[in-house]
Image 1 (cartoon, rainbow, N blue to C red):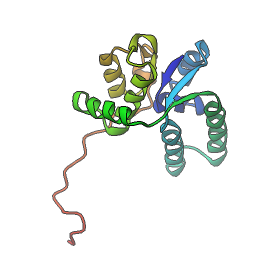
Image 2 (cartoon, rainbow, N blue to C red; image 1 turned 180 degrees about the vertical axis):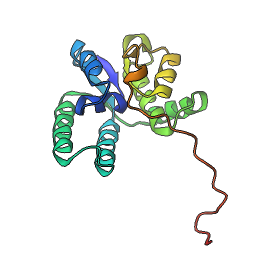
Image 3 (cartoon, helix red, strand yellow; image 1 turned 90 degrees about the vertical axis):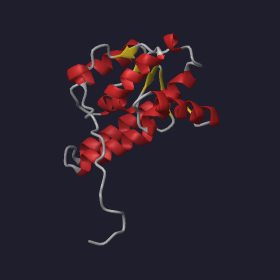
Image 4 (cartoon, one colour; image 1 turned 180 degrees about the horizontal axis):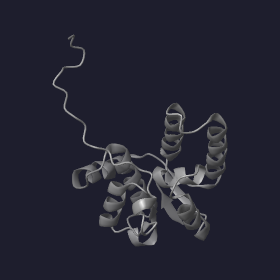
Length: 166
């Protein structure tokens, strides 16, 4: 059994540089555990690629069918107060956004804190680093050029107030 975050699930649904490596990881042990919101993250990523004309309608349909097949067989970590508290701790000690903190909190809940017992599969650089610091074995081992995940630059501070007219 392995914990999969959305960045690692997506290449199972469509052709990406990391697809072959992640299929090998999935084939080595088909049991997948994911956070409750992973399906939403995947649908969002597919819709974004379609809006950007990076996926055509047929590819989106095929990817959503593959996602449905995966969701029928994976286990989901459900939201809870304990998970929320864990995510709150995570955002204070790791440089993660809220959704990624929920992913990591989901993995911690799935293994009941025994991080050595549950490999963590992700392509997101920051999430991989945080999972490693929490004690998870992070897969794939060398994600470097395989990742399709773009690093998110810090948001620029706007000098204009929302709703202010210029």
